[in-house]
Every structure is written in C-alpha cells, then in structure tokens.
Amino acid sequence: MNRTLSLGISILGLVAIVIGAVFAYQGIVTNNMLVEKMDIEKVTLALDPKNPEQLTPIRSAADAQKAADLIAGHRRAISPSYQELLGSGRYDPTNPRHLSYAQAMNLENYLYLGVTAFGLVQVVMGTAVFMIVAGVALGLTGVVLFRMAARAPDGVS
Image 1 (cartoon, rainbow, N blue to C red):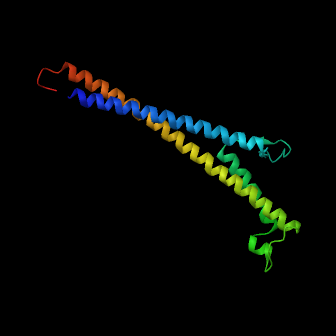
Image 2 (cartoon, rainbow, N blue to C red):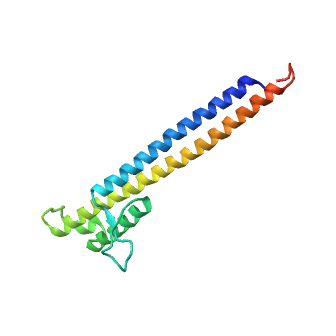
Image 3 (cartoon, rainbow, N blue to C red):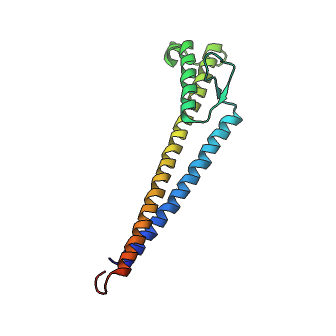
C-alpha cells in the first residue's frame, strides 16, 4: 500500500464532503427562497375538499403540483384550449373570459415552474447527501489504507 495513494484518497474524500456541504447549503437556501416567494405572493391551497376555507401555504413540489392542477381544471372549464377560447379571433384583454383564461394560465405556469424548482432542489439535496456519504467512505478508506501502509514491513507498501 502506498501512503501517497492513501493520502490522495483521503483528500478526495474531504473534497467530496466539502462540495456536498456546499450543495446542501445551496439546496436549503433555494428551498427557503421558494417558500418565501410563495408566502410573499400568498399562494395557498385548500387541501381539504370538505373545508375549502382552510388554506395551506405551498411548501413543496407536491403542494405546487396540486394547486397548478386545480387551476388547470378551472382554466379548462373556461375553455378546453387557448385556440378554442379565441376561435378565429384574437386575444381581447377587455373580454372577461379571455382575461380570466390568461390569468389562470399565468398562475398555472408560475406553479408548474415552482414544481420544477422544488424538484431541482430535491435533486441537489440528494446529490449533496450522496457526495457527503461518498466523501466519508473515501476518507475512511484512505485512513485505513494509510494505517495498513504504516504497519507493512519495509519494502512492502
């Protein structure tokens, strides 16, 4: 066993832990920012159909998905598609149906973007955990190899 190799493995493990910690920090900060932005805009969802007045703030991708799907259903009640809404005409912002449809589409897209952002945060956090675990494993492997190299008789390393 070579001491230089074992030190290199340990350093690689340390680097993986540090990068994993940076990923975890970025994931936490981004998740908090998403939740804060949803709170500022007062984006809420009635989770209990029996109690629609009880609104819950959106805190996750699943919540944002439920809200976006609900709005999509309401939007499709106005018109099944944008093309059918317009018929052969053009968008008219003074038409309440057109305006409601456009606003619903805007909020729906905002929430689907939130789903994507929350999902990306989950991927980053999963990567962070993997990197930290891999870094600990590499670091411990390097320590074990270093100790084995130290105990090896001269000429055998």
